[in-house]
Image: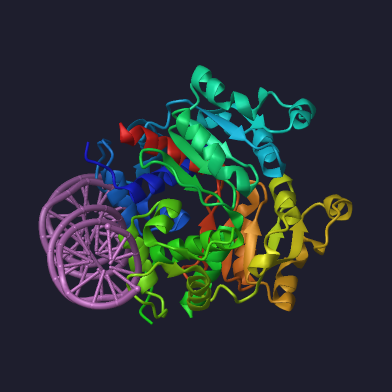
Length: 207
Length: 207
DNA sequence: GATTGTGAAGAACTTCACAGCC
DNA sequence: GGCTGTGAAGTTCTTCACAATC
């Protein structure tokens, strides 16, 4: 299998999510153009992305949704269950904690952390909650691979450093702070202010 | 001023956020390498990005933070105040509603919408809250340019269509559903499951 | 030594265009 | 007509490399 370009991986991940929804609504096949409309890409890009997969396909016919989904999942190794932990149990943190949708995707929030003992005792959750100082040991013992940072921005870099020391493989940073990590750690930022800024800048550029 | 590449705009938006933080901590100057470390880019990329700005600069000396910030803000038109509205007042929606940090960036959440009259009456907020059917008229009358969708995923496309009809300029989609919009509308997705999937796929690719 | 600025080279990604298939 | 698959072309973005400055 050829190396899949990074943007293609992101799109294929999105296509996977789309296929799940189509499948639930009972649709069996889909064209590259239809997929493109949904993920905001051209049909050529969609076909090229799919061509990176090891999927055999008959040209001239729409994609079989179940099959395409299987190959994306397989080649991107999306089926591999992964454990994540949540650091910071404020509004966003607890909203994520309460979200039920991860499990069916193979993700498990395996632990939550906060500096406040009070919060840890008050919050009702299936997930086991701990004080920050236990972060490194629990990541190791539970085999957690992804950390989701939802702390106040001031604490983000410090938490990221701790996660890196604990040999985390990926970080999703939900704070407004930019966080730097070694090259081998995957990082994505989810920052509402940042997105507003980017969308705003792009709106201005359009004119 | 040359056309700024899209990825450069995104990075410059991030650099802007970084500079704000550095400024607050009292630092006056910064190098391209330092910036790069913080936004996970190379120093050459940072310098190239900055070179797209109309900023005059003396080579050989670190960037003056206040000046750089001014030029990014000016050239990307980040100072332009913009109004956004929030659709869907569930956990994430209300968390965003309660967030205080937008104002100092020039963003205003000018209205909130939900299908539930109950929610609209119960939620305590400075922001004026309305039923969905008022969406189009209020966007028009208030001059709202950005819509933040926080509804259940099933409703996302429908809301997006309404926003497009109301001539929205940008959408931030915080649902797990992929949403399609005409090319002229800027759209960014914030989907935690999607990010987990992408990070997971990238972790697998690394090996 | 440090730094920036930038044309040129290189790499990465997207689109085209058309053969082949239904 | 529809569709996919894919090498080639085109475009966009990143990195290099080095002059210039401090």
